[in-house]
Amino acid sequence: MTTKKIVLIGLAISIFIASMLSFYASANPDGLEFVAEQVGFLNTAKDSAVSGSPLADYALIGQENERFSVGIAGIVGVILTAVISFGLFTFLKKR
Amino acid sequence: MKIPQLHIPDGFINAPVSILFLVISAFFVFLALRGAKNQLDEKVAPLAGLAAVFIFAMQMINFPVAAGTSGHLIGGALAAILIGPWAGVLAVTVVLIVQALVFADGGLTAIGLNVFIMAVLATLGAWYIFRLLQKIFPKNRIGFLSATAIASYLSVPISAIGFTLQFALGGTAAITLDKVLIAMVGVHSVIGIGEAIITVLTISAVLSVRKDLVYGASNLKLSLVN
Image (tube, rainbow over all chains, first blue to last red):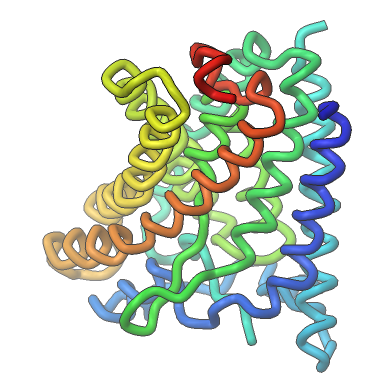
């Protein structure tokens, strides 16, 4: 299989996971948050300076449809990550 | 359905220690930028780009673990074994920066803390454990995947210990450390199983189609792999 084909398949899988599968993610608190609550320091958490951003908490602001909301967040995240990472690694590779 | 916060928020760790880890992380990212140049060639570079994207996507699907909590892939071990440790540090760093800036996941002042435990500690820790195990285990597919499983599993409690260290140095809450350490390592010792499963399945899939693309498999005998 060519590298190009592998990368394209990998991107397709990533988009599927981020846009569709993400809806079914567990909403239970993450390990760190769980520990923070159990042990008693969760209340020291502060909101991020960008907590008002349109995609904060992996949800599209003002969007009631959760499936759509998280799906858009996933797709935007995949695209942004792809642009930065492919750009960075293409720049860094041996010429 | 709501994706929980995955990373260290602002406020858990005080400003001086957050800045300290920003400096330490920046130093490792600098080393990674230099180191990755020698590890990335025409073949690996596109895969490195993909690794960051895949890790971002996988981190969106928290899997439930016992007692009302959940875990997610860190991806440091996966990145190190697939594209090399230095490129791996960069891939996870890119994911963490996107998450902090765009999705408000992981505080902006906590970015050095998060990069240190997940992009640096988990990635490089997993890599050195993996390399050590490769020396001991048989040089075949089973040996390779066993080393992958153990290294990726251990990277999760290692990160948890890293957080506890940060908390010891600059935690804003007055809580005895042993409580934090036991809880962090306890929960993350379970979450590590998920990390190992996802990492082994992913590496194994790439190994099946193109063994030559897996950075950590470069010393595997072709005949034994396929």
